[in-house]
Length: 595
Image (cartoon, rainbow, N blue to C red):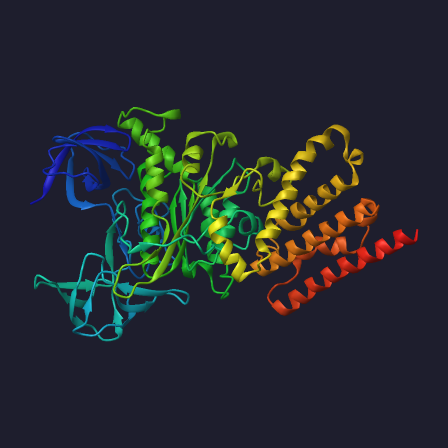
């Protein structure tokens, strides 16, 4: 029986309806004659409030509202990779072929292609017992991603039928399971999952493995763990989007999911144009062969913006359940929070700070808490992770505003972008004094075992120099650097080397755009070795001017463009630099002693 009610009030994207029998929270409804998609977000007796994911202009009170009985869900299966979706998982390229450059209201297009055939290879046999999360077979979705077809989480039983290897559509039945109650459940390559419900896992694992990004300031000082959470707030022009692009391009994740949540149309256009041209750094294949894009720009319906990050994290959890490491970038959570504020205002809820709803923090926490490195469900568990990085766009770069502060209380890695650094053309413009990472202690063992036992000591020494420089800078501004004792000038020079020769990194340089951990270690070791030699030389009466005239100083400045593909050759170049540091300081000391 069709469950139909009628519209009694319209306020922008918020529709008030009455008379839908048995309507539930988060149920999807079809609104008006055009059957626009909406989601129930409040129920009061016979009346429900529906946030509509499309433009509501032209809809009138009295038009019908149909309840579907289902929550807002996403389709999960082969065909996700390389696709560009809107906030409620409508494929934008397909919509363009049907409706042109603008999304026609009421258009319904399946998220995944129903006609395309995929090569399915079964990995189970008739008679085997399976539970939710078990692997049924595989599909080579792209050259970079082997799509694992899994038993849905809430199903278990005995395989009574499995198709042979061959070409199948996502809606074809590939297996049948006899459940405990004796019923037969057909399984397809595609499954659906409600976006607001986290997918289950067996256990959450400690944050012991870093997500390597190839960005020196991140991996050295403020690393994020696989399955961790990070935030990157900054004002206009500080480089949030470029930094997210760098993380997406170079992070050692199997799957990238990028959400343009309420960003300007021209910025999202740049993402859509650039991502297909990026190459996967490890294989040379197009980066889109392991990427999903969710585009919900600022001129698209505000309600769909609120749903977009749930759509993205659900897809991330799905790939995590296959045993993949997934990196999700949300750009930006501030625009998502603004959507929450607009909808909350239309619902006439009591506003919190700066008009944001009182539940802003809990909604942000719900999103970030779905990150994690986990042991998946199933009889043969896999280990997968979903790492979330959320950009925050505080008005005027004010980090005290509610969204930034609420995010800070949840995330464990904070990359604070600084407009002063960006004005000085220092990129990434991450302020090393305002940023932090709570993963340093848990990741220490990884760095000791996989890079060097010296790694953490070198990092601590470098950070100490940068902090000491900040203290000395106030004195320098008053009396000038020449008035400082030589030992303090040595600190300033070492800190300058760390800032300019190590932390500053060009996203456009073919070599400097990415640094592996072993190269970072050798660079940092060379700078700290130079500082320690400089400090000892100053104590023996050698001036800073004489030290800075050493030829090796220029070689240190050019370390960042040493190629890293041939590891033996790279190490030989760094060995030569360290050798020259020792020889040139020894020669300088001999000259001074003779004089």
